[in-house]
Image (cartoon, rainbow, N blue to C red; front, top):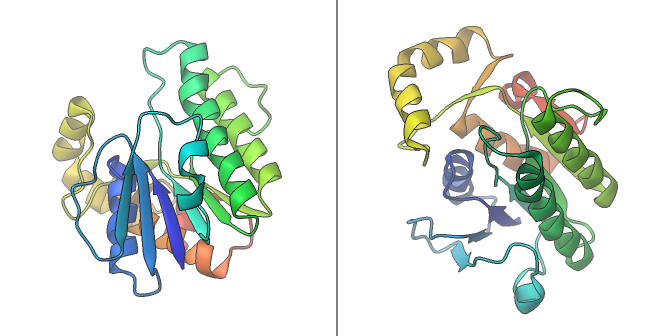
Length: 218
């Protein structure tokens, strides 16, 4: 399986890249992002760019892939609706439309979040935007999966790039380890996220929207 990974330097992306490089069934990983992942591996190629709305200059490098793991994402905290929509919806759909055209059979896995509003009508801005993003991705691809994790425990040296978020993970590490075991409905790990993405891309799943409990069961 050949995989394109967006957001390899984020917390979920770091974990997903690790699992892709460790999985013998993943033959090639193309990472697309604003900065290098810091990883070196025979299976890994990286494209560093600032423009995430137009891929016409690199289309030849985006063909021949079986799956895309889209792990780019931002927090809505302190962000107005227009800016959040641009960074969440516009950037995701720009990449997705290009990939769907170049790879019609591609399986697209999108990391969204617990509480996403599929109706697009709720009171919470970020949930509406995520809901529209999910809905349009499901229309665009023949096969797509929306991953909606709640709390995520970073493992194997994975770190959040946001200092205050990383501080919270450090303080709550023992609690998260305990909750992963007793409350799989609410907590998963970066390792389980990455492994589940590979699993659904390879074998499929019974439904397109996966909550933390589904991710952990995979």
